[in-house]
Length: 219
Image 1 (cartoon, rainbow, N blue to C red):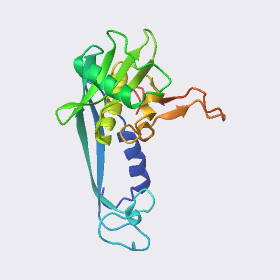
Image 2 (cartoon, helix red, strand yellow):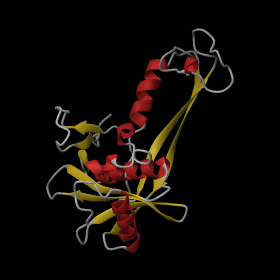
Image 3 (cartoon, rainbow, N blue to C red):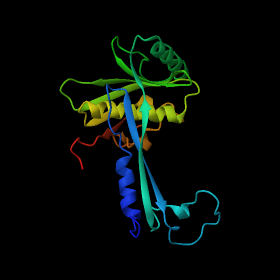
Image 4 (cartoon, rainbow, N blue to C red):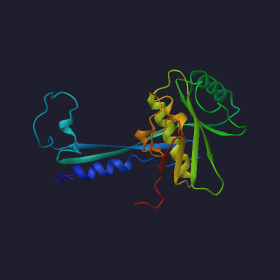
């Protein structure tokens, strides 16, 4: 690839490769990492600070020459539990105590499938998942977050929700608004979700988040 200016193609490729790559038995998902190696620095003025990262080296904004590209997949693990599992019950109680004012009851129906992510030997975040028979839409929520849960755990959970839906033929994922209660842990907008419906000025109107998934034959 030496001798080719790949700023625009790389920006588009990075946006596509960040998609969840699938799920195995609903518990394993992945995220592509794309690392370009530059032959020289991008065109334009030198940055004020030359040590470390700088916007001046953003290949999406400044043309550059790329010598090679490394592509890797980061495998991320989650587990499926039932609503009655002690880990889920404990995390539900912790989250309910922290967000008593949420407008819905903190309850899970018996038999509900719950995706959980462990961190430091304990369950950090979780989300109930459901698909209506015959529907291409998956729903997730409520979302549960333990004390001290990190954004990395939240990212793994959101990837797992999308991976589970995609692996089962889902075409859209809908998250309830509990995903917005812990923004330091769960950041759905960074995972391609959008808030719906469009805000009409009513602070009490119900909202949710949704994301369309790529079709299996998308190229």
